[in-house]
Length: 406
Image 1 (cartoon, rainbow, N blue to C red):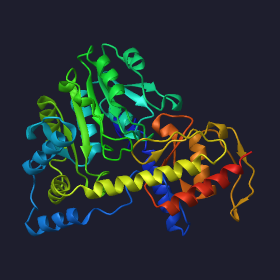
Image 2: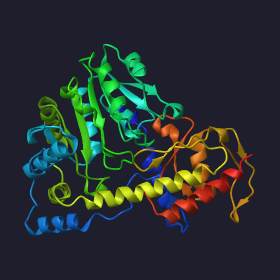
Image 3: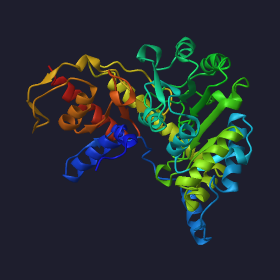
Image 4: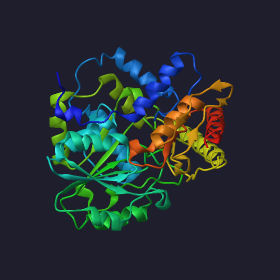
C-alpha cells in the first residue's frame, strides 16, 4: 500500500544515513572514522547525571505539563536574562523532545499551504523537509564560501514577497560553522523590520560553541523582537544529545500554539531528563567552557590539516563543530581501481559531492556528508566532535584517497 503523499515527499536524512552506513561497516569489523554525526563525543557532566539519578529516586515518573516543568522553564528564562539580556516569562517557553521538535513545532504552527519560508543555504538538512511537511514553499537564498556562507541584507530583501511567512536562521551554523556578528544581524533585522508578516525562527542550538566571543541573538533587536522564535536546548552545550530536551522562547501566542500542537502528538518531554536539564542551567557552567576549549583546539587542528590537502578550499569556522570545505575541484574525476592503504577499492566516477562522500567512506573509511544534503553542490561536511587522534588519522586517509583521483 502506498504511504501518504506527505511522507513520500520527504527526503531521507543524509546525516543519519551516512552515520548508519558507517555503523554497518564498523559492525563488519572495518575501522571507520565517523565524521558525519553532529554530536559531542563527551559524556554528560557528572552533576547533571546525578540530578537524573535523584529524579528517579524522587519518583519523577509521571507526565509533565505539556510545555515542561515550571522549574525548567524558569531556569531557561533566567539563562536568557543573564546570558542574552532577553526577558521572557515561563509561559513563553515550550520544552520539547529536542530542539528538532521545537523547530518543527514552530513551522507547523505558523506555515499554511503555499506560504513561503526563506531558508539560507547551506542549511541544516531538516529545515526544508519540515517546510514540506507544512506544505509550505522553500525559498532558498544561496550564500557561498566567498561570503563565508552568510546571506546579505540585499539577498534577504530580494527574497521577501507578500507570501513570505518565515525566515529560518541558524547561527552558529550547522553545517558551516559560520557565525553572524552583531552588525550583520542588525542589518538583517533592519530589513525584517519593514516586513511585519515575517516570523524569524532563530536556531541557536550551538550558542555556547562559539570561538569569537559573546553569542549574538537576533532577538535582541527591539524592532523585530515580538516576531522572533528562539530555538535552543541542552544537547550541544552540555553533551546531552540523547536526553532529548530542547526548548523555544517565543511571543506568547506562538508559544501557546506550539504547546497546543505538542499536546496532541507527544505531550511533554521526558520527566527525568527535564530535571537533569534544570540542573544543567542552574548548576556550574565550567563544563561548558571546558568543552568549548576542546572544540576550539580541534577546530584549529582540522583546519590546519585540511588546508594541507590539495584541491580543497577551507574557511575557518567561527562556531559549532563542523568544517565545510569546498571540494568541487574533485568533481568529474575518476578512481581507476588501485589499492589504497593496501586495500582493493572498486573503480568509480565522482559525479557530485554525494559521490565524493561515498568514495571517502569506501576508499578512506572516513564518513562525511555530501553538501548537497545541505543545499550546497560543491562542499562536504565534516564533524570534528571527535578526538585529536581521530581527526589526524581521518585527514591523512582523506588526503591519500583524494590523491588517487585522476
